[in-house]
Length: 77
Image (cartoon, rainbow, N blue to C red; front, side, top):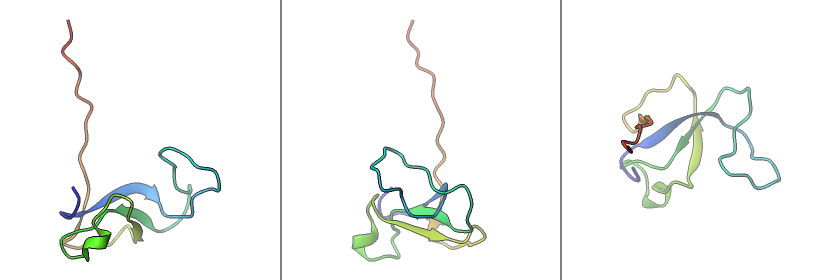
């Protein structure tokens, strides 16, 4: 999804803790929501998964989207 749209995330924006973590969760309160990656409207440096910024949850724009994901059950006998 790099470069297509910024990915709108459910996490609230805030500083990460001092200890390294896998899939760190944002703070439980706060106005800003995380957006990751970059879109076709950004410089190429922003089009990477490590790019993390925030937007107001009521922001609408042509370069912010969300990713629909679902668990697909395996068909093993």
